[in-house]
Every structure is written in C-alpha cells, then in structure tokens.
Length: 463
Image (cartoon, rainbow, N blue to C red; front, side, top):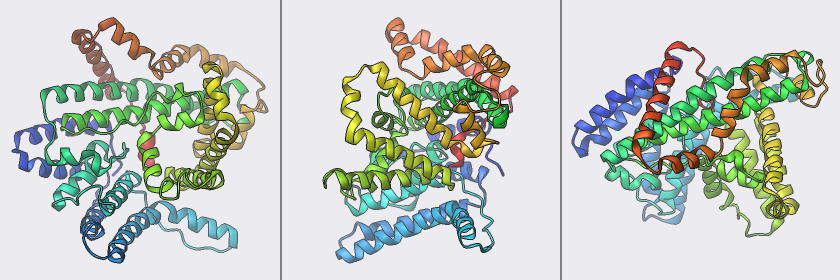
C-alpha cells in the first residue's frame, strides 16, 4: 500500500493523542509504540516485520556493547549491531545499484532483486546505529525494556522523514514526557506552520518544477530551465522543512523535544554555513559518528580533506541509490575543499550579498544534480541552463511562468528567510490573538487544499 500521507495523518493523530493522554504515565510508551507500528503498517505492512527485527537486534546487542564485559566482547556486539543495521539498509537500498553496476562493467547479467525501498529506512537505521554507538561510548544507558526502545525507534512523528533523533536527546522524555498545556499549544502552532509550508507553498511551487522537468532540452529556454530549478530549490526546502516542523510539533504535543532541522539555510553566505543550517540532524550524525571518529580536523589539512570527501560521498549515497546522488555528494565535497583551502575567510570579509549570491548559485546548481532522475531529459536540461537549449535565452514559456507564478515565487522567497518571523514578532510583540488568527487561516487553507487537490508529494519519503 502506498503511504497516504497527510490525509491519513489527520485521521490518525487525534485518535492517538486522545489515547495517549487518557492512559496513565506508565502506559504512554505502550500507546506511542503501538500507534507508531500501526502508522508504519498503514504504509508498509510487510516491512513492519523488518522494523520489529531491527528493534529486537539492537535492543539485545546494545547492553552487551555498553556492558562491563571485556573490550573485545563490547566491540564485537557493537560491530554486529552496525553490520546488521547497515547491512539491511544496503540490501534494500543499494543492492539494485550494485547489481546494475556489475552488469554494466562486466557485461554480464545478474537478476535484479525485486525489493521495494522501505519508507523511512534511512532515518530509523541511522537512529539505531547512533543508539548502539552511544551506549557503547557510555553516553546513555541502554533502554530498560523493548517497548521503551521500540517507542524511540518507531516514534511516528519523525519516523518517515526525520529529523534524525538520537536517543540521548530524548532520554529524559522517554522516562517522563514533558506533557503540559503549554507544550501542547506550542506543538499545535508548530504543526500548523509546517503544514502551511508543505501544502500552501511546497505543493504550489512544485507544480512549476513538475511541468518544466517533463520538457525535453530542445524545447527549453535558458530562462525557463532556471525558473524550474529555482522552483525545485524552493519546493524541496518547504517540503522537507515543513515536514520537520510538523514532526517537531507533533513531538512537542506528546511531550518530546525534537532537535531543529533547518535554520533558514538559503540565507547562508557560504557553502560551509549552508550545511550548518540545512538538514542539521543529518549533519550532526555524520560529524558525530563518521567525521570525528576518522580524526576530523585534528590530523592536518590533508587528512581533514580526505575525511570531508568520505563524509560527503556517504552523504550523497544516503540520499539515494543512484550515481547522481554520489556525484552530488562529491560536488559539495569539492566546494567545501575550495572554501576550506582558499575562499572561506574571504567570504567572511566580503559583502553579505556577495556571499549569499555565491552560495545560492552553487546550491541551485546542486539541486539540479540532485533532481537528475526527475527530469525527462537531464542532459538537455543542463544544456538549457547554460543557454544551449533549443529555445535560446527566453521564450513565451518563460513569460508564462513568470506571469503566472511571480507572486508565488516572491512569497516563497520571503518566507524562506527570517524576515517575516522578525516582522511578525515586532508587530504582535508576543500577543497570542493575532497569531491564533493567522494559524487558523493557514490551517483552513491547508485543509481545503488537501481536500480539493491530489498533488501532494513528500520528496523525502523516498530517501
């Protein structure tokens, strides 16, 4: 069954919240775990068994990894857990790419594995790995029972598309959720803001990219290609950050403080800064569990560059089993090399406008590499970006998209910055009535759009 997304969530969330708040404290994690399994089963009924196996293996091995046994036994338990977690991710996500590459390179034919990708496997696998490593490092105590660990690993608000939550981040709330009317109210507000970003902005501007990406390069002008890629740049931000806001909001309603995942990344003045603001929980994961263990920046510049290259190859592959994602990761590794060796200090001294324009240019081009598989004619699309398409610099299609969507582009661009938040705070000065009116309007418009519109993709569900 294909995950039905937001419509199902509107049915599922109130029932779960009602049950969660009605039961005594000692049963809340049982409700949360049960609800999360049901939520996942709605979209992936078969792969619930895989998730339960992941819970069992990591729950059993973690105490041995963090126990009082010999160093060799502790390390063996850690390695076994990581091999299982990464092995399952590799089997379902990368086996097809590996087989097709072997077939192409050696001119043979190995039957591809007919395995669909379990929803959210990249996210919950990284959470399982971080849990076992943190227990091994003795940063956290092992979960007391399988329900506790199961509730953490499968927690439905962030199960499908993050943010990636480490066990030590929510360890206190796992024992005693921070349930209060204030947190519930703040959670609803955050959820509605995320809903508006996803439904009203991402879905609307995503239609522009959907139309342009289907056109072959010989029918694209340079202006139209750039309009399409800017639309995708805005769509992926509002889609992913919108879902993260909804997940953080739902977690807050349940008494959990999930980490922030975005901090207005398109305001960045360097690529280095951009990746401190975009998908922050993924960046934290790679720093904590790959970059720092490899030595980070403590073993000289040459070793640091190697570490950055490895991290970004893995970051690219994490996003998908396709060569364009690997190229995308290497693309950012090279940009970070340039900043690390030559450019970063100059950017810090330069005008903020120069830094922002530089960053946005390379980020937008990067999204072109990222979305390669979504295009009907990728090579032709990039030729059009460079002004070598079949329609020259601009044509009637460019004018059509500008005339039809200019206001939406302006609204999305402004909303991607912190300008509206600062303006709103200054105008209302914390008064709740104007905010309540605004959130009610966003909610009504979003629900109306969901009822009447069938275009409702979640871009990060496929990763």
